[in-house]
Image 1 (cartoon, rainbow over the protein chains, first blue to last red):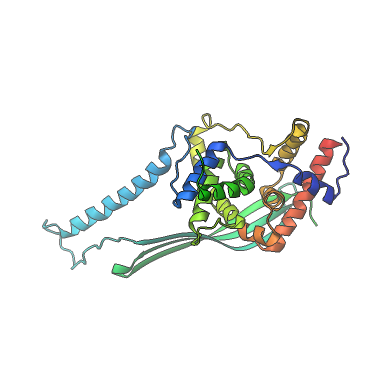
Image 2 (image 1 turned 90 degrees about the vertical axis):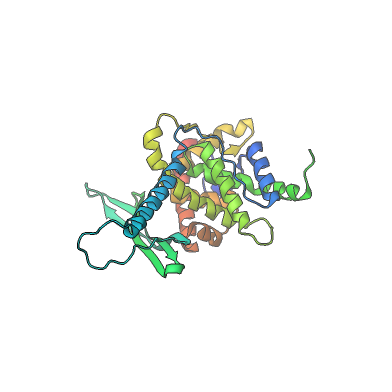
Length: 160
Length: 167
């Protein structure tokens, strides 16, 4: 079927399509959770055999860090004879009670660059700042790490 | 079993806006299970931020889906190296259609899939999400003018693709 593909016609064509309804189970689960007023999530069965790794790895990392700090604290407080070292301050355990992870888009712009064969290509560039903050007010410790990141997305081969 | 009034209110809200949320999530995920999880988590997170118990703004839900999809994509990139042969990647149909429209809907879905993601998400949020360009900008973390530009470029690209299909 031939169609006139003016902008308004295409928009109307797209709008005539209705997004598929949500599966009944998803809708029912959500309604129950929302009406209860609490986000009790029940993850759907994953097709992946390694789904448990998604939480096991971060939990294991945190456990490893805790072991590291605890061993370090016990090491400095033990009665073992020390080699000749200057007075050392005990290692304090860092217990952040506030952790902030954020991503901030600081700039976005389009640019034209050239492929190795010389043909121009338009790209969309996004500059992000990834930030991690750990705070332990009891010890007056605040760790902040900010890392810039540049994302480049090819947009098209036509330039204007 | 009869629903409580509170449940009926939420079901009406989900019946009206849920399909748009799921369409947006399906375009960002590699599997149907991930898309449904994304919608569930995003809706509950957005609703949890409402102090008055009212349904959250659509733009907030879409913004939450967008942010969580970015995090999920980063995790999946590492996981997929291990599970490439196992993950179910069967594409779901994006639209509810009558039999005579099914082929057209499939072709438009394929054409949308070929668009750059930044165009596809602007078109989806504008046409099926019902958002203004200002709301699209808030959801995606971009200026409203950029949202409008992406929408126009996306329609131009889609028009070229669908003209070739339907001609």
